[in-house]
Length: 186
Image (cartoon, rainbow, N blue to C red; front, side, top):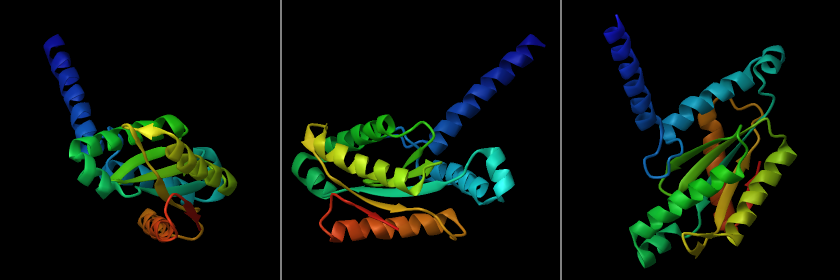
């Protein structure tokens, strides 16, 4: 009987390790796209439920930030991919330390990150996005001064998380077109 319990315990630990591999980005140790989408969809679904249920589950508002490191290709070209990887790792760590415990951070791909701000009013979400933009510009990350461009959306009638992410991505590209190192909000 004890041997069987030990085997079950070992299998449960292995399952947890595998989940970590499936949902976390190996380089930055934040959620990867799959992990972010799964957890983000759950949050979004809870948010979309009727008001009575929403109060019970505790999610009263959401905002989403799509963030991209400005001129990241130049960093890789000038300093090499190892330095670029250090930038990604340290930026992810910096973002985790700066964000609230309730927020969901994921690496979307390349130098792009997504952040789901749970229970953040529009004004609070804008403050958080501006703070991320300003602090990143003032902080040396991997020995370099970086800037980021952010698209921020406060969901209104959007039916899916994918639609919200797509809109925030477009806003981020507007920020880049308007000179980078800024937040564009919808």
